[in-house]
Image (tube, rainbow, N blue to C red):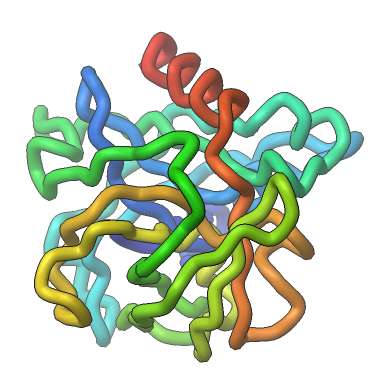
Length: 213
């Protein structure tokens, strides 16, 4: 997990992402609204990703340049909250691919009904992550919902990890079944977060990212 940076002007992190397992070992998942403005808008350029960002701005794994961002088509066309998901294709750093350097989590589509999840995100006003263990629940047909206090601005794109080993300990294990986004771009309060449900459209977007990586 790490922070998504805008590098135009003074570099600043404003969203969260996580490395996911992929054939070419170079993909990061985040929310679509982190990289594309939606209806009538365009993609945000000059992006980078810093896995494992620490307090004080320490970047133990370096900062990785984003080559391509891919948002779900229905988000691009109409800011569809049921498709607030994007993938980032990350350039190698010093000849190494990001998943080889820091590892990655599997992504799961059509996950049954939620259940226990761990959220890890980077508020834009601090460099250390916030962490919460909660219970994800379906909210309608296209959303997941979880009560997790403290997920303020900057945590959009935070992964929802299912099957984390060791309970509430932060191990980085588990499978990604959601990212903060979706309804109201992740929710209207810092206590309750949402995710678009990872359905066939998200699977198709992942497969497109794999082809373009």
